[in-house]
Amino acid sequence: MGGDNAPGEVVKGAVRAVREHGVRLVLVGRRAEITELLRAEGATDIPVVNADEVLAMHEGALASWRRPRSSVAVACKLIRNGDAAALVSAGTTGGVVATSTVRLRTQPGVLRPALTVALPTRPNPTILLDAGANADAKPEMLVQFAHLGAAYAHTAHGISEPRVGILTIGAEPGKGNRLARRTTEMLAAIAEGPPKLNFRGNIEGHDLLAGHVDVVVTDGFTGNVALKTVEGTVRFVLDEVRGALSSGPMAKAGAFLQRRSLRELGERVDSETYGGAVLLGLNNTVVIAHGSSRAQGVAGACVLAERLVEGRIADQVRRRVTAGGRATGWLHRLSQSEE
Image (cartoon, rainbow, N blue to C red):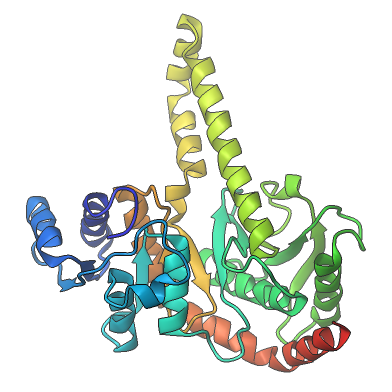
């Protein structure tokens, strides 16, 4: 029920995920409304669980308590009861993060869950986290985010030894604020594991789309600003390219000849291509599609969720956190003692 184009586009995306990708899913929301939409799509065999309440797009962290019968809360209950394996929503990020964190719980040893997004680099997407779940973070949290991101890059994109970098204001060692410097020192100290981490040091903002690393770690405030900046820049460039290609007969002819390459470029930088953001560190899989997602984006989010469940992303994270538990605990105590 969440998202700018819900529930119509969400239902269409769900039907596409079932028909084109064989995803098994259940829709949660206002039964009468959803059933009518499914009937129009000729997909009355998709099960629906009723939920009377809906998280509004402006609702944030307190929504978990204000809306106990929201579609997100009911979906989390299905997961906790073993009737589903993952949650997909295009609703308010703050509300989905808060509700799923409260109702699905963080894994033992995980300090905070992190919101993870894929940036359109080649040959593999670059994973950025945290993208907005934790505006304030401590160094030991970012150390865990590095492990969460490595597990995600391996499971979702098949990268055997993901390269990890810290987002800061200079590539040289020692650059950045206290958070970045302490995180860099800690990651360098424990890079040999267990578990082993392919830590490559600092990267700057202009390297986010350069593909120099596979995982970029930062706090949620910085990560969200960086993500929105990248998204805005991509939209601006695409609009300028479209304007230039339609500026005259010769430009239009050139655009026609390059239409396949232009279409591929548009698909690669489209946020819907990657399915959505993943909330890592919970006991179950949570995928948050872009609020403006249409059917293609919703279907992609469902496919991503299924892939992560099949790849046992929660188990991958659990193993990394457990293996690094002693070092993480030491880092946590060290950080507290220095405050």
